Length: 364
Image (tube, rainbow, N blue to C red; front, side, top):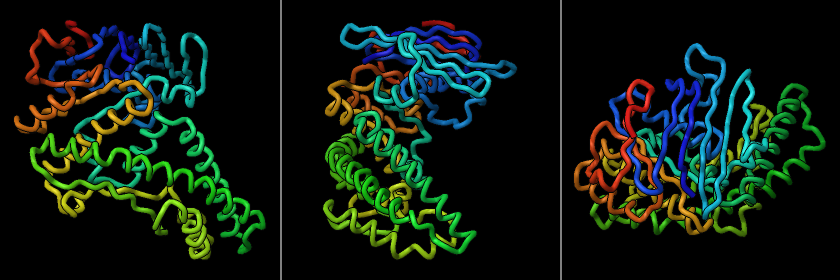
């Protein structure tokens, strides 16, 4: 799958723009705050239906306008597909080849991996950032995981409503046992899929980390459950069930669910050190890039096609040795679209250069 063209109307700082891409290497070049990242954001929205950096859709509309529209032309094994997303009057509409679809139908249709300097939060940031990484990666690869995650979040929402009722009445509703059973069943499926995914990418992350850093370090991705312990995959349901029983009084007091995969985390360990606490910034950035490359590699292994890879100014934070190693690591990826305020060590004959200035495409 690759993107051939994107059209923007009233998106971020673009009034109207048409950008054409080649199947392999594309460099979006320009000074800071000219719109480079906005182009990657638009492609990301076309792939998964949401921005990777902004939760409020209204903030994506160009100042003074009332709507935005993004259209992308994608190709896969000779088949042309057009994805169109519009947002107006607090409503988002998604169309694939002219037919309106649900957001769930878009996820996994294209396949995308994005990395930016803000990705360091995958190591240093909150557990929610790492859960989002796991969920987005798995949802793009496995429809069954997407369905399980949606069901699980609905169960947590329903269970929270019952706990809020118990908080105000002092009595636990009789149907709580039903929702506990559902949370255990579906939560087990979610946790098991996450564990297997981390196991799948473990060796890739370590190999990528060693390639970029040039050092033979041992890298481990350790799943970290919240409020329960996992000894093996068979006992996940029992562990969640026991934890739910132990925190019931606290849940009733607080009015929300305190145990389950919606609170879980995972940890980067390098040579036995938790990178969040004991890693240098260079190690942290290397770990994130290794993880993103492993995400792309795993997506191809599972789906049979390499995702579109978006790299937002990632070379700016790397020394020359690591930058050279990263270029070698991604050399066998299919379509790459990267941004930079300067040349990134790639011959112009090998790359499609798109220059951006003030929300306009000035060349390319």
